[in-house]
Every structure is written in C-alpha cells, then in structure tokens.
Amino acid sequence: MTVSLISCWLVARGRWCHRREGLSKRFYFPLKQEKKQQTKMFARTVRPTVSLARSLSTSSQNNAKVAVLGASGGIGQPLSLLLKNSPLVSQLSLYDIAHTPGVAADLSHIETRAHVTGYMGLDQLDAALQGCEVVVIPAGVPRKPGMTRDDLFKTNATIVATLADACARNCPEAMICVIANPVNSTIPITSEVMKKHGVYNPNKVFGVTTLDIVRANAFVAELKGLDPARVNVPVIGGHAGITIIPLISQCTPKVEFPADQLAALTSRIQEAGTEVVKAKAGAGSATLSMAYAGARFTFSVLDAMNGKEGVVECGYVRSEETECKYFSTPLLLGKNGIEKNLGLGKLTAFEEKLVADAMTELKSSIKKGEDFVANMK
Image (cartoon, rainbow, N blue to C red; front, side):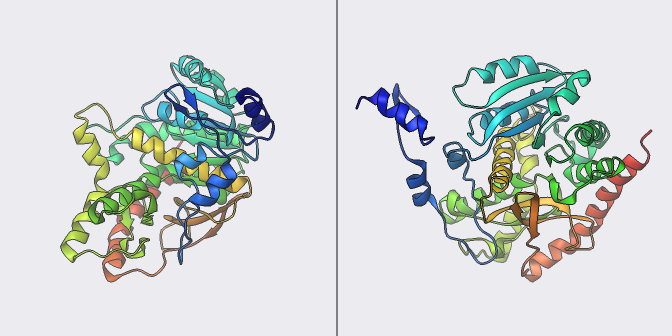
C-alpha cells in the first residue's frame, strides 16, 4: 500500500493528522498517543485535559462554531491561530472593528479543517455571532506601563457591554469566555447585560483566569526543576494584583517553599502581568501567553461540551463559595458549562490571609461592573 493510499485510508477513518518536520509528514494514531499522555488524577483537581499540544492533534467529536471578538488584536490574532489549528473547531468566526478580513484571509490558507470567516464593524457584529456555541472575548485596549487593570475600565467596560449585548441577542445559549480586562469587573458587566435580556445562565459565563494558572505552573516548575507540563497549581480569587491567590499548598506534585520564598513566589504570580508590561516597554501587555491560556480554556470547554469527563479548569464565575458574588475556583466542566464548583479546598493560614486581603478589592470591582450596567443609557 503506497503512502498516499495509507493516508487516504487514515483520513477516511478520521484518525490522521500530520506535523511538518522539514518536508516530511508524520502519521500516528491519536488513541494510542492519548493513552500514553494520560496524567494521574489527584485528590481534588486534575491537570486540565487539554495540554495545548494534545488539543491540536486529537480528532474532533463535534462540529463547533467558535467566535473570537477582538480577533485582530495582540491577543486575538495568536488566539485565532491556535483555534484554527484545533480539530475541535469546525467554524471560526472572527470579529473586530478593523483588519478582520485580512486576518481571516491569512488564517484561511492554513491546511486545517476550521472554516474561517471575518467580520468588521458594528454593523457586522450580529452576523459574526449567528450560530456560535462558544464566544471568546479578548477585545479591548491593552495595558501600558504605569496602568493598572482598573485604568482600562472605562474603555473596556463599554466594549464588553456592547459585545455581551450582541451575544445575548444572537447566541444566548453560547459559552461566553471573557478575557478582556479588568475581568473582576467585566464578568459582572457581562452577567448584568445578559440578565437585562433575560438569558443569563451563570453556568455559561466565564472569566478566563487561566493565565494565572499557567504562570504559577511555570514559576513553580522553574524553582523546583520540574516538568511544567506535570505541574498544576490552582489559582483562586480574581484576576488582578492581590486578588490573584495561588494555592501552592494544593500544587500537584506536592511542593514546599520556605516562608520568604513562598511570599516572593506569590507576589511574582500576582504581578506577572506588570512584569510583562514593563519588559515590553510600552509595546503592550501579555499577548502570546494570554493567547495560549485563552486557547487552553476554550479547548477545555469544547472537550467538556463533547462529553469528555473530568475536565477541570479554574475560572472567575458567579459563586457562593465566599462572601463575594464572583470568585475564581476550580470548576468541573460539562456539556452545559459548569457541572460543579469544586470550591477552595483546604487552605493554609497564609492562603486564608490572602483570601481575606482580596475581599475588599474584589467586592469593589464587582460593584463597579454592576453599577456600570445599571447606569447605562
């Protein structure tokens, strides 16, 4: 049997994928590969089922239409590239206020199954969202040196409210994954807008805080000489400064740090966004790592929608786990969004103090988002 016939047979069985290595192609069976890559489930949380590399190579079970709102931006373009490369996505709808047709045309030349369409300007926003099952929102202005996430509020609050309104009217059953900062406020904004339309489902509106987990995993692995792909640090709370609460005590594998090193590590995770903003010296904020994190969260949502069991990601959602209306915790995902909130778990005294210290700021950010929608004309 020739290589071409073999490849045709594998394609027909839906079990073929390739990766360019020079000019060659590699064939393999995802089911066997998946068996090798399975990771151990730990006591309270499990390493998210999407290693990004794995999501780019496994066979799709369903045909999902995913929209990226803000697809021409610093996060939107690499995020769209990662989504285009995933067989979990069959249709990719890209929207932005400028340049989207070019981005869509560029991505459409990639030899993967997702069909890409581009929409530009508010008059095309409704069309971009028709039939979408997952909507990812990286739209908004980026942080610059000296800016906090709160400084972005006025501009990004209006953008997110406009996009949430369009989602409520055009795809009210979709999973809404908000990346746009300040997430501590933009999730309350999204929720309140959906409520106004009578279509709010708290199990389907997520603040994407995955970048905090990704960073925590990378930093812990670096300090302990571990494989980052094997490290899982739950991060709870919010998505800004002291509201970012890494639970190092719940890390898998188990790790320990002296008190001074633990405090320094926690601070670095909380201020990692500022670290990138300063390093880029006015050229923007975290875009590539955020695109990776956004794609990872989206793939987890899609896996769960496809019926995969045991999919766990942290996310900033409507919550009753603390005195705050919204709070990030590990979430068990299912076909209809959040299947179960896994809560905070057992905290150390150090972590309990971090939670207590975050409450005032979180409550203020939540109220700010809710007030914004209440005062909208």
